[in-house]
Length: 102
Image (cartoon, rainbow, N blue to C red; front, side, top):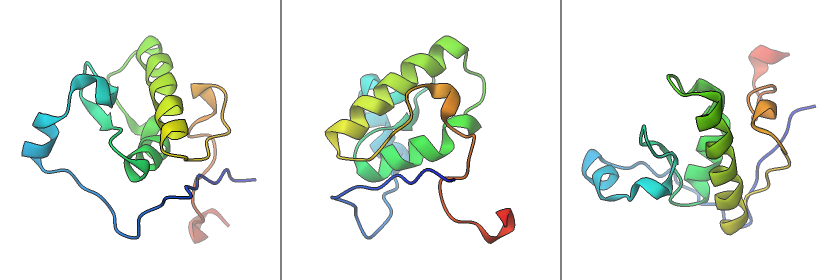
């Protein structure tokens, strides 16, 4: 059974940040602040960080643990459903329907 991440305040358009916008974001607003990966600026970015968590490279398990807690806090702040209780659960199942998985 796939986990669904939804938000009551979801946006109809995707949010992308320019290089300049990313430079303006404080390190603490990233899931992985040392690497400045996965910004957590709004619900859309939180959902993206959840979906791409297992794709982040060159980070330690400790970095993943800390990132998970940052994402979990941001999910709560932006009202994004995130039932996972451990970073080990992220990436285990597709988060969106994909006909290739049937």
